[in-house]
Length: 364
Ligand SMILES: [Zn+2]
Image (cartoon, rainbow, N blue to C red):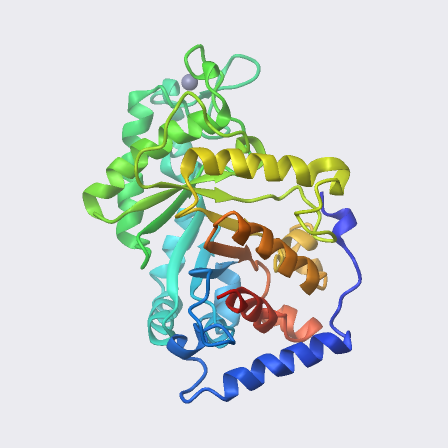
């Protein structure tokens, strides 16, 4: 999925340097320190930016080696999302380094969210022996603790909701926006009751229940429905509860061409746009979020942290992409920036965070 995306970097492109310089000039001309979000949050023309969430999603090792809150603020971003699983992030956030990260975000005016592949933590695999009926029926017709759960098991829902609340106490997003996803790209249940529903619908059944549980501890909680991999088809038989918002993550696209080029990647971009539009028709556009991969070193390195590739950053593609998302009324945009850590900066120099932030702010 990532092979053809490895294109030469634009780091040495003179237009990039010029652009970056202009961005820094804008920042430097502001009356207060440009790491303050009140100033960095303005578009270059002084308007309030169209995109209200301008984020990055990074992993805990990235947070441990770079001052992400300061970098995000300097780039005019609003939000840092942590990743990958609830157990891992909750462990980090309770360390001294984790508490420091939260405090730095507050200082820099950066919102904190947690974007998590969650189901194996929310329904611990060790409970399989006690009650196999909570787990999914696999493609061979067997109950299996491999991934996800059976969404028609009331015991499973109960355990999942208890754990969602437990994690929410530790991982409280400053925005009220929660992200508890199913296991990464993994199939849902094939039991006689579940198989009448698509994977998107099974996810939504779970999300509606999780949101109800979250609201008991956080009255303003909203929860993402992730359209990604096996859940791109919009749900039909299950309706989102009020407070469920769409998160759209087109991982199978190419970043060599804009998402608006429908024929790109043998028509995959066209399919993504159709899925996006049909999902927006179900979930609404107001709180919808795009989760992109423009800055995702992990994807472009085939998820090998020890063999990091330079980001194939294409500013023009990025700008066309965000225009296509803005045309649809989407105001929340974030990108994975996983593996963007101290080692990456040492190997390849500064990543294009300022260009990313400036691009997101320029639409006013
Ligand atoms: Zn089932």
